[in-house]
Image (cartoon, rainbow over all chains, first blue to last red; front, side, top):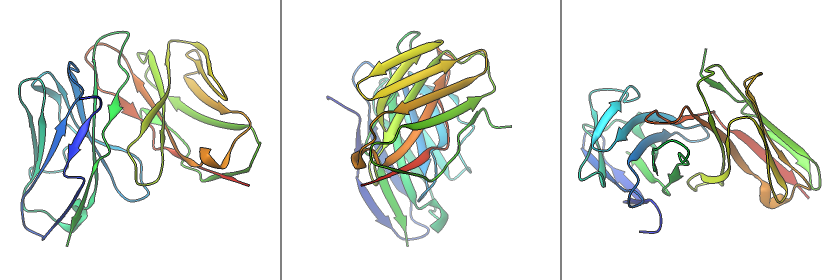
Length: 115
Length: 111
């Protein structure tokens, strides 16, 4: 596709339920990032993929959070047993990930509300 | 110490003013410097991209990198109400390393 696509755009879930957030990066982009943005806050790094591997997952806040990437393409961020503090916009970005061309492009985000 | 420091603002200026937005960083390995603009309830969009030290101009926007001081700036000339947004700096050391973001500065340009 032309840009980074995230789905769903909005998700309301009950506390304790599991949710899956999807990111379709720009074709050919080897690097993929997940960030979380709470209301009025900056971007909080969650995890970084290079290809299908995650060399840096240091930002995942707890073991309820996991992510995977397949085919050096689609990535899924899963939050188990959601809590109200998980409410935020989850942003995905991708970049070519090679030297001299590391601009990252963002999707519109998934707005998650845990009630 | 955070890898990237950015004053969150908010910064409020009158229309037509020159705006200066800044970030400082600690890791001298950073070589790639980006500025993103984020409108309310939207994803960040890439505004400017600079490699290494120097200036880059694009219309009313100028990005400046001073690697010796570990200081990057974004200047907006003739600011417009449509420039009201959050501006985030982002840095990368290149190759297979993650992108690091500043906290973002909220800018309001009032008519």
